[in-house]
Image 1: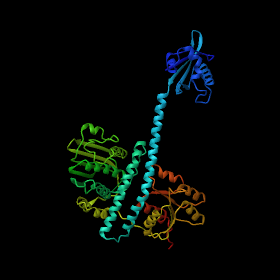
Image 2 (image 1 turned 90 degrees about the horizontal axis):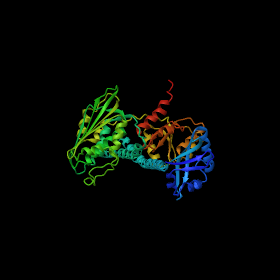
Image 3 (image 1 turned 90 degrees about the vertical axis):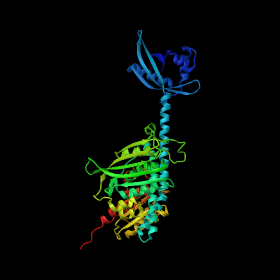
Image 4 (image 1 turned 135 degrees about the horizontal axis):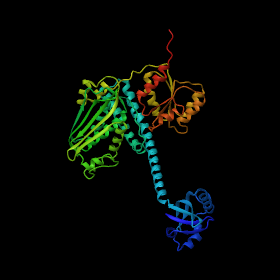
Length: 516
């Protein structure tokens, strides 16, 4: 804290020793004479330093005190921002102004550091979102073409199983992509949970298929303990649950050199009507953790026994993400571990009940025997595609392979499909009087993006449904599309269930029934 003493006529009378030390002057007389040399010509507010001092003194006399930021200039030329307070006092019958100044450099440095951190976080989020978009576009082709081939249903058994495995692997890659994107979401608090109906058998199969590859030539017995009374379908965020399962199971396998890894799943009763508790337990006989390691388990970038585990892949982000996801889903995660003997993770997550069906004995036995493709055939719900020859849609996308995938997915519905490779081409079709039951509009296109194209189309008075197709997977994306004239959105890779729902909603359900 440094201080100056002024009379009411803005003549400096005195200052404290701190002032002399800061500005490197020998005595008070020299400092008072050179005061305005130690301030810039103009203060941050735009007033001259001289006028600013007069103004703040006047306010202090009127109100007892005044406060403002004041910039000094050190002899080295460095700026010294301060918070100055002018206080009007009476001393020995004379009016005086005391100015207290607090060095703001530490505060400014902390603010700048925080701003830089926010800018870096924002830049990372943009990069991850862009990378996610770029990867999702080719993944749309891989997954879409595999599903198109599967829906034909005329392949040899080994070919069909190959396509099933391509679909499963592509979906798992998407989960990994989403994990990467979630690094920024965890940091910024933008993680979100999106409940939907999901199939339990598919969830289990996808998890087992992905994680079995980590076993390799290790002498590990992988034990799958699934309750046959597990509900066939539940309502929750399947993607987030798979992230939790994959992070826990991959760690169990990676840190177990030999012995066994057990993956158990069942449900428990909940006190909330229409809800059950999904109970997941993953245990291993691997390295285990000491008490101090357990205390740091959910810290970012923490990996243990780095010398021993130098050849084990991992960033140290899986457990923090898992912990955050479980909390977001209103669940709990418990860990028991002993160094050298293994670990036991128990997760309880509330899920809503969907239907009364259970996994059943047939699927249970096939899961126990790891007959993956048969489980998929028995349990993956088939879509009953209604023929809609009266329907007409336009698919707009600048990537040719995406148009091919969209046409292939729509083919079983017998819908008339037209395509456009740009927003401007779509606009020309509407200008020529073309009308479609649905326009599927890609979001990110060169020249004119989907949002700009839709604004132009809507301004032309076109009121029919327009659904966004996007590879972006960021929070708030749906609201952004709805606020900009879209009727809905479907993310890429295209989910055939969501396409089916969209076609039923905008075409079949709006079809005028025939008059008898």
